[in-house]
Length: 130
Image (spheres, rainbow, N blue to C red):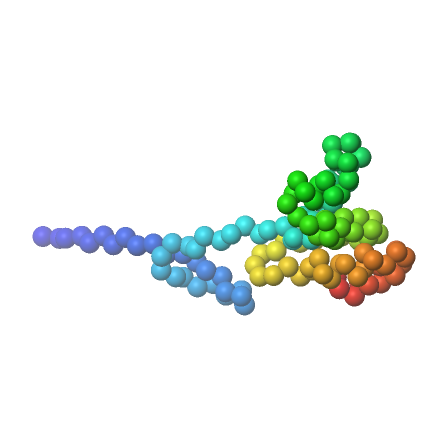
């Protein structure tokens, strides 16, 4: 008389940082999707706010700050990103998505660059952090 035995279990292939593959027990961990860098979101928001003011939806930045429950100082920081040279703004909007960890470029890194009015100097400072 022959008996059969069936075993069922979950396993997955996991890639390590060095590129090696390893078979592991259990279901594959759920990976969060990569996220858009915060400074890219803030720059897009600044452009949106500017368009809302031009369209007459809001009177000024102070009104947006009240509706958005942020201080006028914080809104001014966000809006100062519009002072960046167009090519820097484009580079920020197309920064690679963040897979994990902290963003490579923070608003605090961009503030001194945005305060510089000369676009050539801005570009030099941008290259130093990008």
